[in-house]
Image (cartoon, rainbow, N blue to C red; front, side):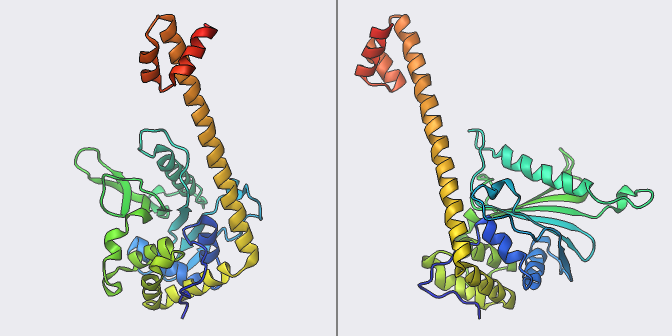
Length: 297
């Protein structure tokens, strides 16, 4: 039935590579159809994956996009991606880099539609950019799904729904996890599967979710197969190690930059003959460090 063994070590489908491996598998068309249907809120009859290749086994393969680019039966284009780790952002908490990335790929995909004869712009296929995100992008919004189209700034009149950006925040599923599986929507079930399938604490609930739909059972079988593949487990470990090393190096560089900044402030205060204890308190340096800087000056 695709149920996950209680004690099994399962790779997380919230990892972008695992996410793509599940959705682009040759047997996964019903899985992808159901997932897309739950997102756009209408039945999808057929889907064509246009980039089902998986990047090579390289720890730096994040240079390759691990999205799932599709065309469905009415011609609409849908790009799905899993944002497994935080991308570098400004410190204002607005996630403008992530949002800019979504808009860039959405517009690029929409404008790439082939022209046949004289283009009718009112007949272009609708384009969706869907990002499943393992962290919170909109802390002020309680909904875990947030969808955006082109609307008027003041009265919210719809200009066009030809392009649409959708964010599914997997970090906001706490209330959903309190529901019975029978009361969950299809998209809620998929969100629970992506977020919690690898966590033993939630294995019983995840298995209830899997058992509730045949396509989720297929997804569970695919996830088990990927998790038991030693090659894929090795790739997963290598990628995680590489990402952790990169984050550690970035944090170290930031700490060094912050410390250099504190030292420079302390030097300026020393030149203005500020008391040593005041300098230490304002900069976070120790009294001994400030004394040493004074001797240098």
